[in-house]
Length: 421
Image (tube, rainbow, N blue to C red; front, side, top):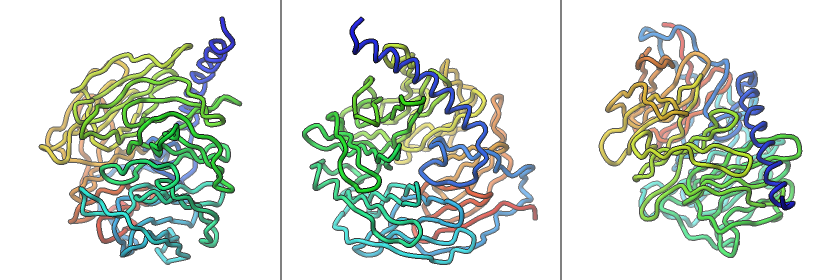
């Protein structure tokens, strides 16, 4: 066996252990922050925050509101800090608010020339990342800014589109960076081997660049096992695992379809060996098993779960996800067994929604402004209650922190709690 093959086998064994460790950590999360896209572990799980006994008699009470500009970026929350990333006029604006009161604390901004060719909204799409007292914001035009959490001072910034030379996507930049051991990992889709790059969190300096992968709207996730970490990317046309330390590619599995399509949902860890992928536009679902030698496709099922852009959530062997497209027909909500591809139930004509799994309730924030509370169970769809939060389009990812739901539409950010009447 060559040294390279031995290294791959060693990594594969550790990667299997890593996923198991990560899942164990996820099940025991006690933190109540929501510091990045889809929460602490980028999987839409908010442990120990679910309201018990929700019924239609409850109410969704708004604690505070804040006017917002353009953009689909959800907020990030850590302790008292809430980070809002939006566009006002020709500026991309980062604002820190007090998460308890909505009071502004500081503001940072820069000029942007980005104009969407398809969507009327030209604001940022990427959720901010809070890490080590720093805030990372990746704008729709490609400007990546690192800002001090404490006072809003600009620490460094990079124009990723100008520097790495990527082509503008259908909806601008939409992949939220991943921070790992002082490295900021991005799927920028750049030229000359800069499909995926790593920057220093402290200085912004380029540490490495790798692959010719095109950019997607999916955000990378991480797994860790001692000194053998791995970053998992769903790129424009592939599922890629690489070393965050060096950029060395560990394996690549085809996933995606050429033409007017996008990959947008994050990869979802199912257990110590399996990762679930989903996309719409004829791509569908894919289960990948992490082996000692590679990542192997267990199945591909185009009609099992075709998520246009929302990430499914996993709980006790059941995967809940939105099947279908927002622009064609009406999507369904579906519960399935990710390891076998068996469908448990389908709620037809449910509509597009983003999902958060708590310890007691599945929260579905629909794009029509309704919040639906669902009992997470395998045998049937069991709706507990639904509440009208907005009357306009609500597409940004919600955040759940300290029992409070933070969600925005095109005009307003709200802090909402569910309470008994």
